[in-house]
Structures are given as structure tokens and as C-alpha cells.
Image 1 (cartoon, rainbow, N blue to C red):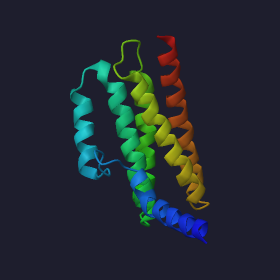
Image 2: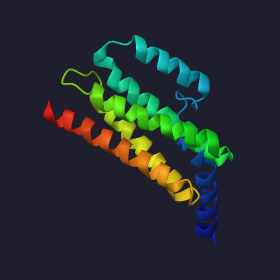
Image 3: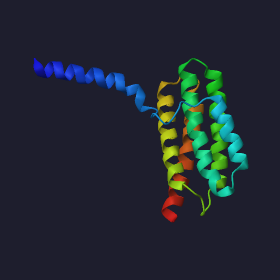
Length: 152
């Protein structure tokens, strides 16, 4: 009886705490304004920092796209996925030997790919090809960033 009560309480605590896993206390949910600010920051950043900033932008856009798709805004989510594809290409072009925070960029890309994989599983049949294409491009950018990390 005592074990059952303990397991029930533990399960309830895990269910309540699960939504807080997506964002830590120092990380806020992405929105259009923060994405716009990050895009402006990329345009002004030196080339050494652009790779990490692109990865950060891809990560935030993947999160926002997932939120929009879950809210039923498939058109906005689709537009965001197309933008992510463009950013993944720009990130690939910005990879160089002297990048700052390259490992952090690789981690952000890996997490964005994980979230896109979740979106692929929950998306409709019509939206799935775009999500999977975006996932493939983010995975490629992640692999390229990882190769740069190991190259150093």
C-alpha cells in the first residue's frame, strides 16, 4: 500500500514537472520578436559568431514552428519550416575553422533536429514531407558542425 502511494505521488510529480523540461528558468519560449532581434543581430555579427547565431535562430524557429503547428497554425508553421531550410543553408556557408562556440551551435542544432523529429511524428500526411526535408537539412548542418568540432 505504501509503495503504491509513493509511486502514484511520484508519477503525479513527474507529470506536473514534465512541461518545465522544455525551457529552463533562464530560457524563455521563443516568439516573433525575439526571432526578429536575433536576425538583426546576425546581420551585425562578425563572421566568427554567425554560425552560433544561425544555430540559435534555427533552434528558436523550430520551437516556434512546433508551437504554431500544435496551435493549429499550419500555414505559419510551414512558412517557418521553409525559413529554417534557408537558414540551415546559410549556416553551412558560415562554417569556418575560426568559429566561436561551435560545440554550442552543434548542440542547438541537435536539439532542433530532435524537436523537428517530434513534429514529423505528429504532423499530418500533407505536412510531413516538408518537415522531413527540413529535418534532413538541419541534420546535415548538425553533421557539418560536428565535423568542424572534431577537425579542431
